[in-house]
Length: 210
Ligand SMILES: Cc1cc2c(cc1C)N(C[C@H](O)[C@H](O)[C@H](O)COP(=O)(O)O)c1[nH]c(=O)[nH]c(=O)c1N2
Image (cartoon, rainbow, N blue to C red):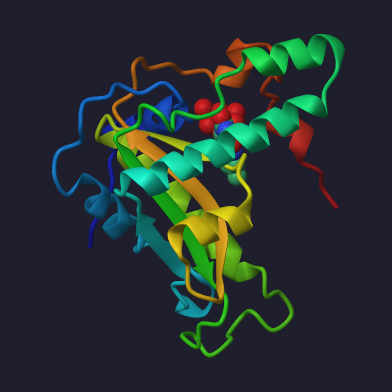
């Protein structure tokens, strides 16, 4: 039986504290097989009915990467137009993706038509497929940080456009686009908090008892 000691638990807590959404990457490449190893860990995640609905697309092709970057720029400009005044100025100053610099691009999808798991747990909540994929991304996020690798989640994208760019099969729903690489800096506070966009709140604010 495997067990974990206090030193491990302390380190694990530090991992949670120091995991960051990274948008500022160094441009040096990751060692061969890094992304594949993160995918291997993601595949250990829980999934509804053991359906393993995660689907990963490693995006190496320069033209496809450029097209994703262009889509981000379009969507981000549109998002900026939804703010005004001081908020708009603040939004414009945020860096909301590391797509240009990150050596690794990984698109993640949920297979919605999968027969694996025979529908267990999904009858009343079909969205649990997507939840399973998000759980896998979170595992990957932490595992990457444990290796000193940064991961940044980009959702300021048009899902249909991403599917077209990557020629994605029918039935795969776009979940997120991940930038992967070595971070320029480490921090124990979210970048959006540092930028005074939003502040982190304590667990008491999210919890009620019945
Ligand atoms: C589903 C989803 C989607 C996005 C994000 C996260 C998640 C969970 N985040 C990252 C988000 O801003 C970040 O997690 C919070 O600000 C908290 O910071 P840390 O992750 O703790 O560093 C994110 N960040 C960003 O710069 N551009 C983006 O498009 C997105 N999209």
